[in-house]
Length: 356
Length: 116
Image (cartoon, rainbow over all chains, first blue to last red; front, side, top):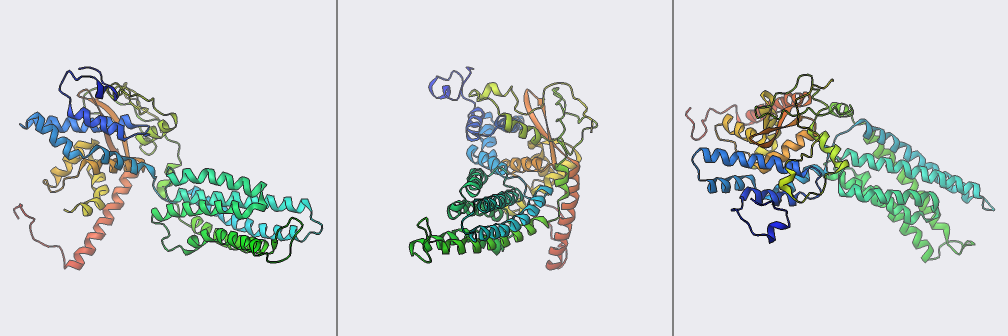
């Protein structure tokens, strides 16, 4: 049999009858794009399919019929891949010490937003305008934004959305907001729209995870900054209040920021309190224990015996998979050759006993 | 049994099957069929995502071995998995008792194809 690459399968002539399982596994491999351990997933599928065929043939079924039955029962490659990928996008949603800590910091975010209102009014009251007061306001606003960001990522973590696309979007938006609220604080009506966007993404993840379905405060809190921005813009467009030396009409801008920050402070306090008050799952405590190296597989054909002394809690294949998701596997287009190159950290060799 | 009913209890079934011995995916499906006298047939496309999810939840631990020239991934219960199994068995017992109470007690009707 000639060695086949994914590209070569289409163009080169086939000297042997194509193996339907090979074709299926090729399709599965292609469907599992961007999965660091897809070789492992394909190897597991191959083992299942080949065993199914062997058993069918042993029971008297024609090989071609056995192949067809095994593949039909396993399911469409694209659908199987999608099911596997979908379970990986989200980790298990559960309260952890980290989410509780994020909730406590969220309560501090509420206090920080109230302080932001206070320092905002303080710097407004200065006549002439004092740069030191405005700097104080910037620092407090930046701190409030930072603490709010921690709260939001706590919401993502609580929803088990560690790998969700929404979190990938929220990360750069949060950094922009942080920079904006610290350096360009006067542009709060724009930068805090980003804050609302990140909060909305976090709450969507919570809703997906079935958390706080009736949490009206969370839903309303998303609207605070957009409404305040509208009011601020309306003040400028309708020329409400006195004109300042910069040609702006800051009256509604000031009121909008103050009211929005106070309302947002309350929302952060309530959401943070809810997050901080959840009891921590015992399983999550175990998860904080550093993972131990996975047991080495016995390469013999006899059924593997589990080595004594392996601490079950910390030793999982997923630990190896997580490790590989950061190191990555090579882009190997010849799937047949990659069957001999396992993705997991498990090395072929005699079993080892690992200390607890 | 309808698929949606099975899906809600598949975790419990998988954990129970693995409570005695480590098994690979095909063997788990086989064991479920054997124990239920072919009443339960879990699709492979359903089982493997469940196995991977339970592995990520630290309820199962996986290991690779070479069998018949192929790589085989076997699963076994972790300590957490044992606890989770006990908890879910209790939950199932409570659920079954509640349903039985509504239905008026356990029914003695034999299922189709079985001798009483």
